[in-house]
Image (cartoon, rainbow, N blue to C red; front, top):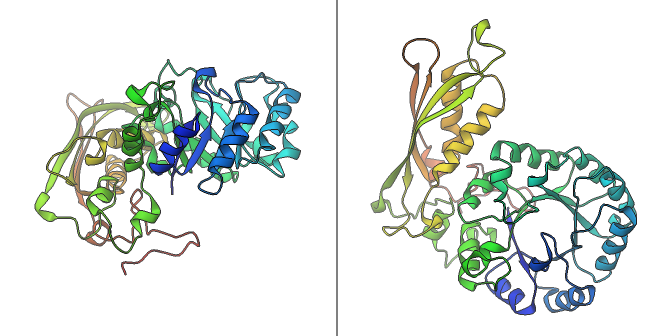
Length: 396
């Protein structure tokens, strides 16, 4: 289950995000850089105010990649008792040495390395982090005025990062000027947490005060396991807006049709030998019938983003050569149907370089009724929901 991390700089902001349901409170000074640190004494004071209510993390600041400097700052913050210490790893020939310098501290403190998507991060560093006992790694952006995470690293590159972290036993987080529309695009990758600051602030100004209303909007887009499993008092329409579709959804609301048309990508595809070793243009047309959750949609909670469709196609294409257009169409359909709010999907795949016109295939696939309507299935993947012990969810 993906958790919501909210970055705060004052006790008042901490109370606001706690009241709004944040899962992790992150202590930082947004006016002092991408990972601007609060004073150690202030970190300790805020941790004592928050401790016991939710996990607390704190950043070490935008530090030079000097092993002794990094270790000293991390040890000082770890001494405050926070649950996680976040350390920025900027591109440097000494980054691996900095990771090794933290090995002893990592034995007793959960250290999370922050890599920067807009600075061409060295993902080979992940194995060094794991070898030296780091608890996790996350992607962020260094220049907050120069775009969001997805502007610098598209979904088809984020997925391998997440999977690599998992294979190494690292907790994985995603952050970087994230906005509301980014959330449904990133949730399918199942990061352990998504981090926010600017999106929680009045007018999205990251150095401004945090807005309770903005916190509520972000929280509503990230499914909370405790709410989804509660026995009573559940707002199933709200859960459905987050991708969860139990049987009590009002069928009278009907469906909306979301579509992506004339989406052309270079694809390695074809069964003939002359089609191997290079890409050819392929056009995708996809339409999806999506369960409605309200007659008055107002924000991302109420819609199914067409970006999810395009992201899924890009990820499939990036995975390598596909023999048949039929195979590619089936993969796209299956990807879209992973979201249980999608009742039906039509996929048309056309190869554009084998003649004067397009050739290809069109398929229509429907959601299995037991997946669409069962609260025992995970909201994002369509797979059976599991609890902390790995037991499959049920409909009881």
